[in-house]
Amino acid sequence: MRPTPDRVRETLFNWLSHLYGDLESVQGLDLFAGSGALGFELASRGAHRVVLVERDLVLVERLIALRDRLGAREVEVIRSDAIEAARQLAPGSFDLIFIDPPYREPLLQPALTLACRLLAPGGAIYAEAQAALADADLQPLGLRIARAGRAGRVHFHLLVMQQS
Image (cartoon, rainbow, N blue to C red; front, side, top):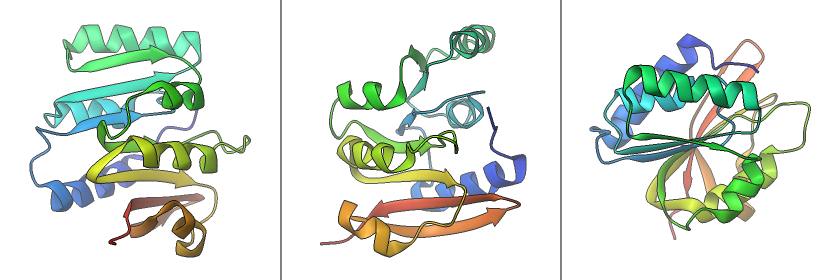
């Protein structure tokens, strides 16, 4: 587990406030929830619905306990492999999708591909990676980089669909 650093999370939510303004109508998905920091932050900012997907049972139990302690009824926790869960979720059902897969596994590209199917019109994908993503690699998916940054060894990106 590698939680998103505080300063990166602050930057991300500044970007999102510029993109969406009010986050109250947003439906979010965190495919590799881990600690749930991004999803719970989104919920605390008024998101309508947040789905956290995590495969590790211990982490899932922690996410559920935290959700219950916070009374965060808008947060749903799903114990599943992120890729399998993404295949089963309804197309176009999320405005914001967080993707921060374990770096040791080749999961970023499959997760991005599935996230494109799950993204609602006008939505965005936040992705963390070991290396900077390039527009040329994202173009076949119909994505482009709206914003990007780096903090230490973490490269973070806000991706949106290309305009037709």
